Length: 232
Image (tube, helix red, strand yellow):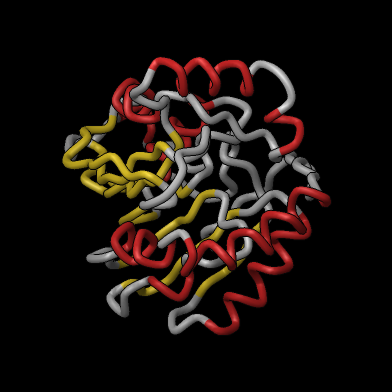
């Protein structure tokens, strides 16, 4: 079995009010904000066994290509996890929805060909620990596909993001931080960023503190890291 026992409580993350709001908002954003196209681009070309971190209500599942043999979807929030299970039943590939947190993934080391982080690094409690775990569970040379909030280019909007992140926004938005530097964090965790592009969500219209995002591909070095060999 790929899963390992973990001391993380089943509901280590619990945001029931935000989860219900996010579920409605995210479905509407598929067409209204162009998220369906972003998800398709994010997942295009993946193959083999994939782990998705923070799967939410499972809207990515419909966009995985047939070359993906299995998805293990980690979701710590109970309401979203239940919705993800329903989405998994409609997916065209095998999807196993599992409770767990990004900081302590309940899977063995080097077990996956690809990993997906989609609007999750903004919410995790410890970004570097989460990325270290993703790196641990990827095989050498495995891909990390990411789509994340980032700091806005304009000084006024960046200042607004910092003000929101330092006050009420994480409390209202399930821990979300709009201005984390996802690219720098991914590189600092030892990944090789191969390609990325800035994305505004929604692509047209008014810019919001949550609009600035980055979409890209990084890779774990193909050189085996002996320090991450042990199975958990």
